[in-house]
Length: 127
Image (cartoon, one colour):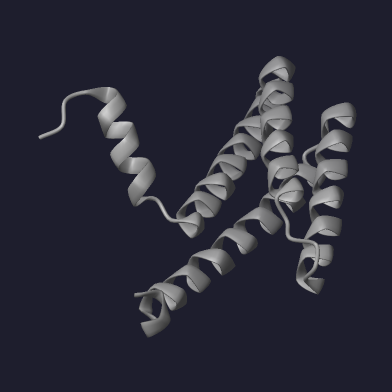
C-alpha cells in the first residue's frame, strides 16, 4: 500500500492514458461551467466569473494542444473559440443561455471521446 502522496501521484500519472486525461479536462470544464451557471442563478457573480474563467482556461488548453494537421482539429479549434466567446458573453451579460450552450457542447464532446477511448482500449492494436 502506497502512503507517500508523491508516490501515489507518480503511480497515477503512469496509469493515466492520454484519453483519460482528455476526459478529465472535459469533466473539469463541465464542472466549472455548471458552477458558473449556479453562481449566476444565485447572484454570486464572483463565483460565476471565477468558474467561467477556469472553464475558459481548460478550453484554451484543449485548443492549444490540437494537432492542426488534421481537419477535425481545425473544426475543434473553431468550436473551442466559439465556446470561449459564449462564456465571455455569458459572463458579461449575466445571461445563462451561452453558458448552457457551451455545457451542451462540452458534454457531447466528452461523451464522444469517452466512447472513442473505449473503442481504442478494446482494439488489439492498443495492447
